[in-house]
Image 1: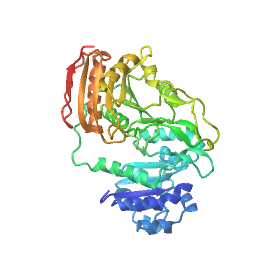
Image 2: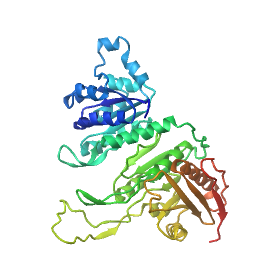
Image 3: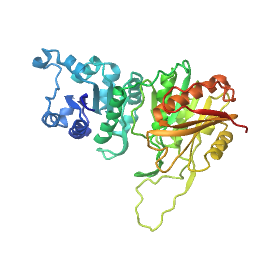
Image 4: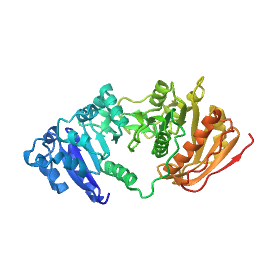
Length: 431
């Protein structure tokens, strides 16, 4: 974040107490930070505290005659490389979605050309309210990136989704946003191979509750699925991203639906599947879930604890079996006999393509690079290790070719590599 100017908006949430720590984290990474507070934020934290940690005067009044004599709200908007609102209350989300300019922070957001990122913080029921979710979708459609919220205990004593991410998580995510804006060599433009199509991508893990504080999950970070959603959007498609709990900002121009469990993944997918042309199931969905979740925290009173597990719904297989359903791409993460298991999944679930990779030992999960094998009914193609963003673009090119050729019949045109990383190799396979 060296030489980056970050304008931090602090709004009326109890999570405002984390703002000084967030400022410190951003400055430790080399950023310059100026803080703009809303009136409600001043009920939770003082401007003096934020001025001390940011080493800059804190602004909180659109009608400050001395500052506004020099059109300071425009000066702030031009100064910022990035506007970060953390915590972002339900109220500020509503005003941003409406395009309001009733205070200094919302005015700056309208006047800036810099990316806007928000980290929501509110009660779990407020976050789940249809009005808040509608505002979230509106903001995403306008390119606002949303970090979190996380899930856990809340100041009101309840437990659920709505916690602001921790300062170090936000700072790490912002560093990634800034890296994409300052990368020296931009990737080659992805052809508009999917213009006019609707593509649904699932990403990240699911969590299956054991009790109010424990769950079954896996190591998926969502990085591959999010990279695919970004690449599909670059290829001109309308993108619906259904995401499990991850610490990643959604790509711009993508409709993102956040879920937690395999049942929610299944329900949200089928709620929106009509009109979807291509389905890419990159999520690591739980195969099994506890038969029932305990209402209270399980105490460690016994030497052993047994859980009864039942099968979770299989979203990928259900989509592949739909009459007149979408072109369906699955993912197979394997620790052994990669080709054998991937081909079994291709046939058993009735997929058009399956993307397979080795996991474990630092491979696949929660890393920035990956290598995969892609299989279809009459062929296969290998992609060597490369950055997941570059791999996603290569995979989208391949998927688009198969989609246009008629649901993975093996007659797809072999599209050229986009020139990022080593060239991929294809070959025919008799099945």
